[in-house]
Length: 592
Image (cartoon, rainbow, N blue to C red; front, side, top):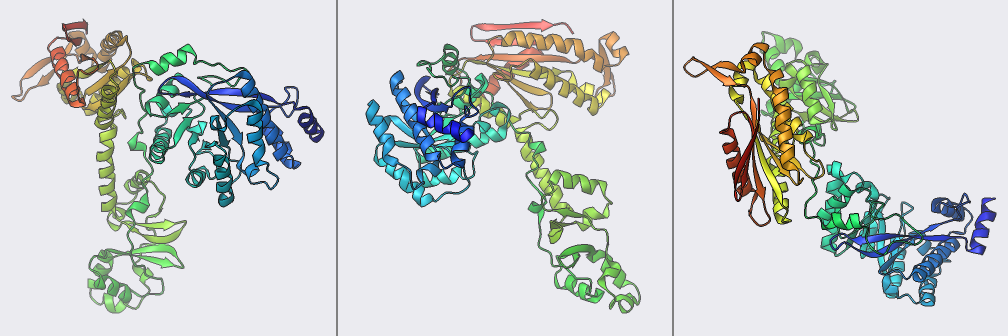
């Protein structure tokens, strides 16, 4: 049934061409179109996936693909579309003995299209290829004046290998890595890396599957040359020849996208394998004297694992064994006995792929001696080596230090490194924005009276409240440290957002005080001389600076200017926004 329908489609050329615009992300103009194909709308072969599946099953893949090319080329010329035509070709079709390489050029000559306007877009469908033959086929097409593109980079089995082997003029990043890129730092890093490789190799990158304005902005800011997707334009039989006004406006907008930042405190990439030390193992048939000699032969050795047929079964510590042997007659009594006599039969064993965070939790929950004895590291149950509690603590501490530079451990908001990076991007792109420094008033004595846990609650509340009044696609919030935050607004209504924060803070903060302190509007604490001092309820000071393009040269200058504005805000009692304007200053306040 499907075969006869397919033959009918081939005989009567019942295929329809659609075209989706590809745009230059920096200039905001259409540079070409990808030619797509559809079967008859009332047929189960309407979808190109079904069409080619049936064709390949019946040995008609080459025939269907050539008809697709012919239909797309003819319709492209008929519509008089400008720019490049991206023509889908499957690599396996290029390698078929019956592949007719000259026919594509003949189709172009019939309709008067020059080959230098056509990009052969290779779409990967299988795990392995004969790369020598594929290189030859690519060279054959290049020799006729075509350029080469690789489709769906990152999605298929060997697209990176194809890139390396064929050195295409264009690569298309698979839509998986584009969609949601504004919320996924891993996707962001992948696209960044592809762009860096492309710059080195002279390849033009095309981002597929752009479906939102935020994704469009993110791709533009990453320096990706070309883009396509539903947000720009859907495939159509008669596609637009000019960019939609809203898309053009977005691309021309002088602002920067807010990059997602990975929460380094949830990073599980570092595992127990990082702590691996090669420690010689004893076997169960060795006696205690032999194990003692192993310790004597290596003064650095503190523990020896006992391993049977590659599987760890216990642990012997130097301290325990030497302590036993030091007792009267113990060496004579126990020296020839199996080493398992003094073995800890329940050692801490962990797989090499266990994250350091998980491992630290296991050790904290375990008996105290495991911290000093260390732990056995295995690979699928087989002995690899040892790790020490000291190494684990050192690694965790270093991770926390490094992570704190990128994200604050209390609020998990971006820390100083991403803050500075974002300011530098704003400066480099000559974006008009507002830098707003946020600081809590009367916070230190609050910590002393109510305790650090309640203080942490207030800091977390402040971070969430500030973030809730930001536009996540345009505004950036960072946690400098302690009770200091910074907001980098691209939203035009940033001043109203600041005042909304102050109003909400004023209404919520009293709930963090006792009823008595709320009634009297403040709280008492002891000063250094032990005398009672009255402090008002915690308030929020916001110091803002409007930044014009070219006004500042570095994030250091902006941080200093925002900090100075914050100091002015703190001189004003209560919740306050102080704005340092070039023509003068102003302040607004909210009652506490």
